[in-house]
Image: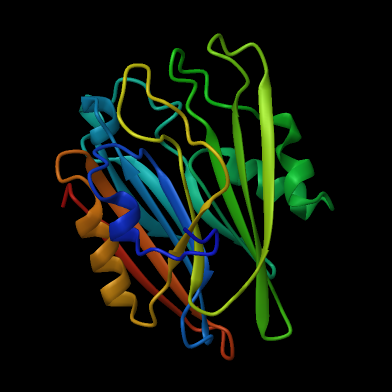
Length: 239
């Protein structure tokens, strides 16, 4: 086994019925594009009653059927936003926390010091976040996970990972290891995954790798590093 092994997303997700919500960030194999992807899954009717919507150059989670919303507090939020040369993607309303913090001069990590895991005991779902920063025709990226320090949710552990963008390599972080009761939170560093040049192949592979019963929505963005041109793919199970 090599610690530098790069696996496909299909390999990472094989047999995993519930990785929860997930973020992938990386660079295409040909080195020309930055890639960011975000997916959501759900087990409850409230969680499954969602779609992704694009507006004002941002990505939002919204109810599919507003009449069936039970608790919007943890399921309705801006998942992706742009700020100057930064692209922010998260699994909750900490997208806005990072946006406001960076806009005010704070770092990615410092912006998140006012947040912690979600208050949904006994799962205490981690808050996962990522930010791509573009400069001089290339980019770097950071990823973060805020997770409970114990089974009672008495304190928050904070982990931030910083990466150079390398050809064909991405990092994948998700909220849960797998299904369970309570659901076990993600462990260790973000996983190394392969990033293909073809947005449609990448999107299809990721969507098809997610459990059919629990997957809800997927969003993928490829950004040309030379021109800044964006190419997006959005899939909603509730169409």
